[in-house]
Amino acid sequence: MGKLVLVFASGLGLGLVLGVLLSGPLGRPQSTAVLPPLPERTSERQVRPGDGLPVRVSRSEYALKDFKFEEPVNPAVPEDARTPIPLPSRPVSAERESEPRPSAKPKEASSGNIAALPSEAPPKPVSAPVAPVEIALPPAEPDAPAWVRNAAPSETVLGEPMIAIVIDDLGIDQSRTKRTIALNGLLTLAFIPYGYNLREHVHAARRQGHEVMLHLPMEPVNPDVDPGPNALLAGMKPEDLAERLDWALAQFDGYVGVNNHMGSRFTAWEPGMRAVLEKLRREGLLFLDSITTQETVGYRLARRMGIANATRDVFLDHDMRREAVAAALAKTERIARDRGYAVAIGHPHDATIAELAEWLPTLKAKGIQLVPVSTIVRLTNPSG
Image 1: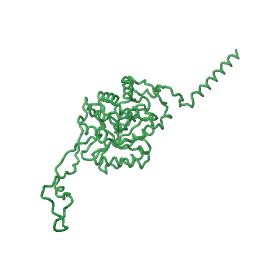
Image 2: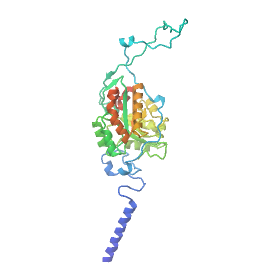
Image 3: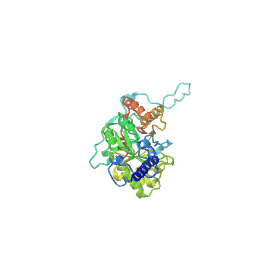
Image 4: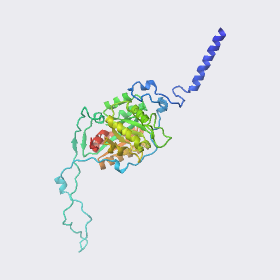
C-alpha cells in the first residue's frame, strides 16, 4: 500500500512539473491557438450577439502593453476629402473701406517713370474677414441620432479656426489611457473594442468633458501588421462581418461614432464599407475616415449615403519624437487658420501626451478653439 501511494505521489508531482514547463512563464500563454476572451476581462461588457467571438492574440496586459498599432504609412489627404464650413458674411467696415485696396502692378506713364493713375474702371470688391459669430448648437432632442445625443457640449464661434484632436488606440495601455483622459482640453477619445476596463475609462472620459468614439479595427494592406482581435477583413462573408461589427459596437456605449483603426485594405473594399456604414446609419452614428490610404471609399460612400461624416487632416505622431509632434500640431494650426477647421489624429504615446499637455493651454491666446469631432460634423454635413 505504501508503495502505491509513493508511486501515485511521484506521478502527480511529475505531471505538475511538466504542466508548468509546457505552459511557459506565468501570465504569458505560449499557445497561438484561438483563445476566448478571459472572463475577468469581459465581465464589464454587455453580452450581445458576437460577444463570444474568438480572440487570436494573448489577452494578457504584458503581451499588449507595447503593442504596435500604426501602419507604417502616412498617406496624403485627397483633395476632395474636406468639406468647407459655410461662414456668415458681413459688410465691410468703414475702417476697412478707408484702407487702400491692393492694385495691380502699376503701369508706367508714357512721359517717364512716374506710375500711371489707376484705371477708371470700378475696383472689384474686396472680401473682408468674417467677424466671429457665436453660435449655440441646439440641444439634442430625445429622438435625435446617437451621434448628436452623445456629443460633448462645446461653445462654438464661427469665424475662428477650429481644431478637433482625436486620440486613438485607448484602452490598451492603462496608464497612458488615464494620462490622456486627464489632459485639460476637450478631446475626442477613440477606444479600441478589445481594450480593458472600457466602460470605466469611457465614463471617466465623458465626466472630464471629452467626446468618445469607437476605434474599429480593420484590415491593413501590410499582412505583417496585426490589427488585433476580431478585426474586419476584406472579403469576409456578410454574416461574419456583421457578427464582428456587432461585437465591437457592444463593448461600451456613449460614443458618437466610429473611426477606422488601420484599415488601408478594408476601407478600400466598397462592399464591406457599405455594410459598415449601413449599420452606422441604423445606429445613428457618424463615421470619421482616418484616411490610412488614398484608396479609401469610406468618406465618399458616407457622403453618397447621407451619413454624418468627417475626415482626418493630420497624423500627429507617425514620427514619435516630440519635435515632430510639435511640428504636426503647428501644421494643424495652419490648416485650421487657412480653411476654418482641422482634424488631427494622434495616439497615447509619451511624446504626444507631453506635447499636448503644453500645447492645449496655448490655444485660447492664439484665437483657436478646440472642439469635438461632432461639432465639425454638424457644421459640415447638411443633415447635421
